[in-house]
Image 1: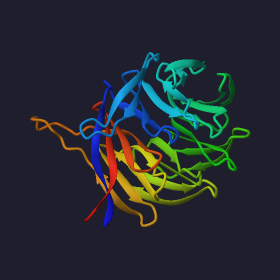
Image 2: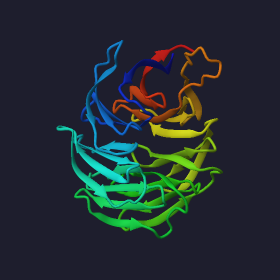
Image 3: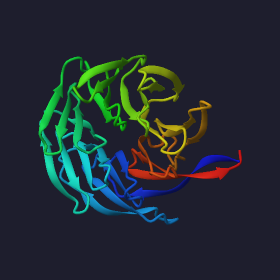
Length: 317
């Protein structure tokens, strides 16, 4: 008997690529999804066989693609970044914007909350990482030793005893920054193509990143050393760690690969069937991933505007 993933349902409501998904343990029946349709949808999960969830509220206000969304650790607020050059802080109880962060001159591609919700980090296409407080004041702009090309993703480490910011970019580098002084700690090198995504493990000890070359590298954040690399076989668009299993998931083109990190083996590979009369039809690309807090459903966003929900089940292989 082995654990595997089964498609449980879909969430329909967007009219563009689903660029990011956010979950919170505070509200297990709610998720957020961001999209190129300029909106963020708050979903109420029903877990029905025919309809896994319904759109409860649409958060509107961005004038361009919404590229990223994250939820504060208390589940009360969401932070979004957009190609319109702004960040927005949302009150999830009312669905209204409580603050807009204006300071980037180009597209904002990634945003993150610190573990104590007191600091916010954002990055734009043109090499810039900014550290904000929750009042919308930019406290620091990282310029020294920053990326030489677009910064594609930025995340905080949840480890309070070792607070770091991790960023990756089109210069093929992952950089780890000391949160206390915004100074560069380490450069992680080894990729041969641009990087799309970085993710930090729930305990803050590991980070994984991937992109154009299809290689999913795993690094020890505490030691600053490379552990090993797993081959995704296609461009990696998104990565995430399971909250309760030693698994790492990668959105690799149209499929999702799930690895057991101890055995370094593939637990499952999730693929979409192409339902079309055209011989040239291609499956939708998976662009975003997020586990629920209990590690049972995996939410995946695609270029066909859908969020697909995969459930951990026990099966025989």
